Image 1: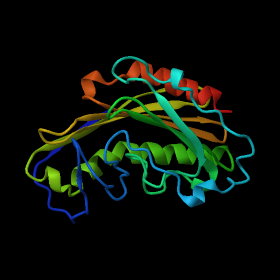
Image 2 (image 1 turned 135 degrees about the vertical axis):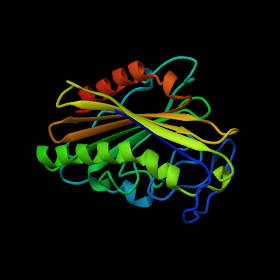
Image 3 (image 1 turned 30 degrees about the vertical axis):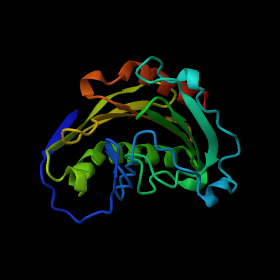
Image 4 (image 1 turned 180 degrees about the vertical axis):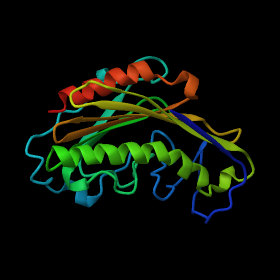
Length: 236
């Protein structure tokens, strides 16, 4: 399924955003829109606390060599592993959709405007994990619309469009869904492809996000799907 909307001048409540290079600074409330794809949030003080009792086993995160490779991405560098969720939520992963007390995450940087994050959440049981997967899918698939509705001062005088596509659900562990969200800001700004792998293995939920410049036609779905499957299989 693919959805597309186009919006010119937006007349919604203003958000305090500042320009930052070819993107925009600050965060769009509820969207977790970074100033640039390479923004990596520093852990909040609360993120250093012990995680919930459900996380009794430490998850294993992707190595940089397991992320999509090639000149499009540059040389990947991995950050540390933190408890909780980033202080500045990542695109489509805001609104506290991931329970901080049950989540660990790691961020990765590639070349300019290329970044990735992996989140591993251990829910109380399989049913709670399945419900979280459903919630994540719905939020990711709907966030393109919220991006269009957000009042971004730098975009007011030009047209922008956004769309999403569900590429499929694959038989990896208890299922992994690949979703793409594509943002096309006005001329002079960088169009971006956001790919998400949302998977479950019992009570564990893994989310892998990749942000890379370029449109839907050049989305690296194959390489990303491989990375997502690896992340889900090896997390625990």
